[in-house]
Length: 109
Length: 118
Image (cartoon, rainbow over all chains, first blue to last red; front, side, top):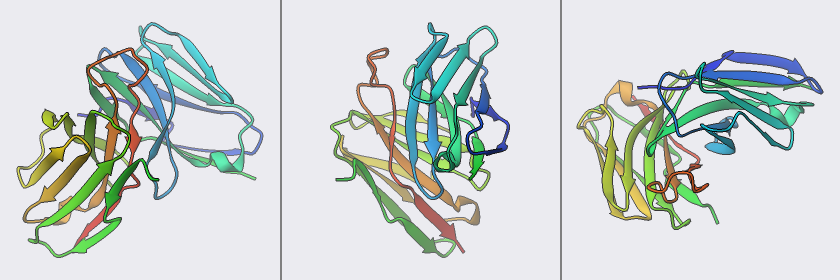
């Protein structure tokens, strides 16, 4: 069964703006990960946040995790046209990683 | 060198045929996976193997049979293909899945095999 559910399904912004994507899940987790998928390609790992962490940064990425609400958000700051892709959250519990349907982000130049 | 490689990239076949998709990883990882991505982009886990041993077997028709000859390879054989099998199939691998919180939990994906059943 699916676990992560991303929101919104699609997001279109101008270059330079920030993009925020949300993920909700249903069960306990060890960690939550965000992946990026360019059209016609495999997924690429972006960032991992553990269940005992609340916020994590990596370059222009900021991830938050609220285990009480079973939700996470991914913020991409100062977006670029090259950030156009689908973004997936994945929940990891005891060697079992589950994905959602992703958020399709379009960054217009 | 591609870390996780799967072949073929495209597979077009008739209903009822049997086909295989191959996957190899050169990362020295212990665990390999097959995921199916449907037309709505849902990515659903099908199987997971750790050191050639099956550890996750989702509710997948038994027409799908994974085979892991060694921990670097996980192939997917599909019998009696149906129209609904059309999707993109991704192979992935990860290290040390039995050791949580060691920083090795991320997955490395292949580029996918687009299967079209006519």
